Length: 136
Image (cartoon, rainbow, N blue to C red; front, side, top):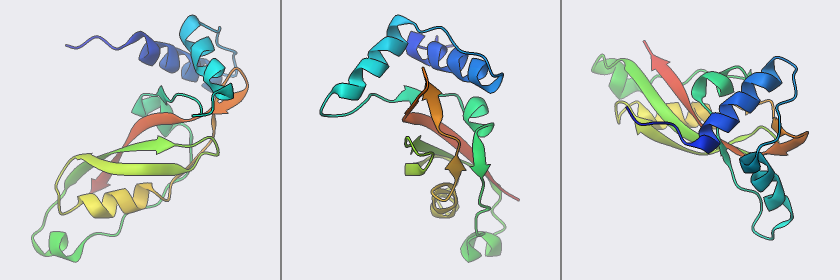
């Protein structure tokens, strides 16, 4: 099993602390992300586990079942990788896993999600995460 990166671990710890109304301590990695705010190319993104980002969803849109998939009785989950911007908008979504016929509908639905902005030391930052869309 692959070990999570230290940045991933820090992001998950900070997110869990945030969800419980606590302030997470600033680590060297967190400070590095915040230092990027003043750079012309913008801040780095934090990687946040799906189970953490799932708790931050304010608006979730159900996908439209593709007629071809319904006709072929295709069901299953589609995992969509996405970036959530500082305002909580889902952007740059793409299918990571799942049936290719269901993929476009899953991506279209996830792009309409709205998240609570992820805060690091009180400042909103972009995050990378995943969303699982179920087709039943």
